[in-house]
Length: 128
Image 1 (cartoon, rainbow, N blue to C red):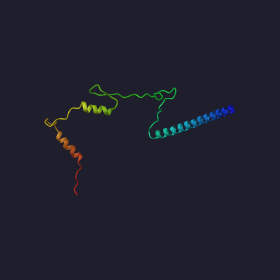
Image 2 (cartoon, rainbow, N blue to C red; image 1 turned 60 degrees about the horizontal axis):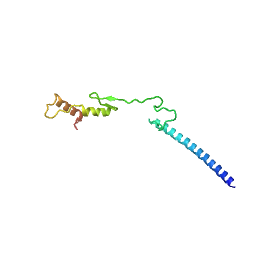
Image 3 (cartoon, rainbow, N blue to C red; image 1 turned 30 degrees about the vertical axis):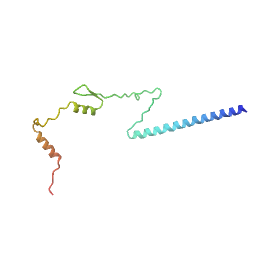
Image 4 (cartoon, rainbow, N blue to C red; image 1 turned 180 degrees about the horizontal axis):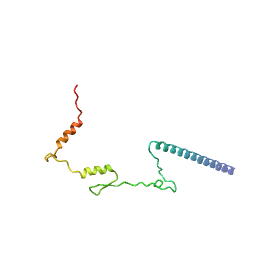
C-alpha cells in the first residue's frame, strides 16, 4: 500500500515537472517572438535592441564593428573633449577675450555696423 502511494506520488510529481518544463518552453518562445516584433517595430523608427547579456561565444564588439571614441583637442590648451559642444563652451569661457569696456574706444565702424544690424532686424513701416 505504501509502495503504491509512493509510486503514484512520484509519477504525479514527474508529470507536474514535465508540465512546468513545457510551460516554460512556451513562455520562452512567446517572449522571443514579442522581442523580435518589438525589434522590428523599433527598427522602423530608427532604434535598435541590444542584448543585456552575451550569448556563449559572442563577442562584445557587435560582430566586428568597433566603436571609436572621438577625441577633440582644444586648439588653445591641452584639454580634450569627446563632444564638440562642451569644447565650444570651454573655448568661449576660457579663451575668448573680454568685450571692450565703455571707457575703451570702440573699434572703427562699430556704430555703423550696429545701425545696419538694427535696420535689418526692424521691419519697414508701410504707409496706410
